[in-house]
Length: 248
Image (cartoon, rainbow, N blue to C red):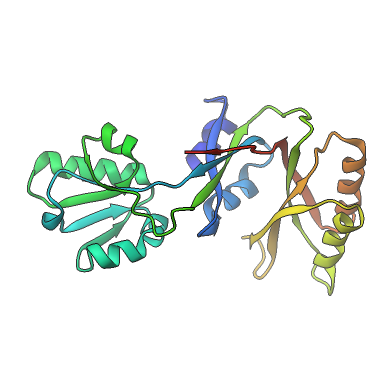
């Protein structure tokens, strides 16, 4: 994830796609943390909602599988299925689903009887020479991940927008309530709130919120200014069109 932020921030690519939250696992910590480092050089340009469909990829029979590579979240999302189908198989966590498929593909290429599998997409299987043994292995068939499109560009007003912000509140009673109350008084709906350690001071937190509206709308910009007065710091990460449909 941090690599995507880096490439967009350096101008090596026009757009980057990163996960921000999942209906099963919640907020994606790696993405939230990256915003604290790269917020000055990138902006959120759009959002995408994608159905999570995971497959078990391998080049052997199911009974021959001895080891499964996957990112930690994939093991969590498929925990019940794995416990039922492969209770004694070794689970090896790696940094991404692509890495899992690549490593499994390389091992299968060296030894066709290695018994290595990976959890990933059908596309990852095609890319790294693995077959789909089982599809739809996630425990929750309604699992959805929301992704953000990163860019150096700013999206204009569409009429149905969100604005993502991060802020640090002062260490005093009621400080967080004061910030959030600004949006309540203005009748602005907050669609998401999360927090991460600031990584600067122990027990200090950076809060992340999504609010309905666009920062270029005068009334909304005024609300942001009022909220900023209650914060030690507040940064607008981007205003962008709301996702209107679910992709599969």
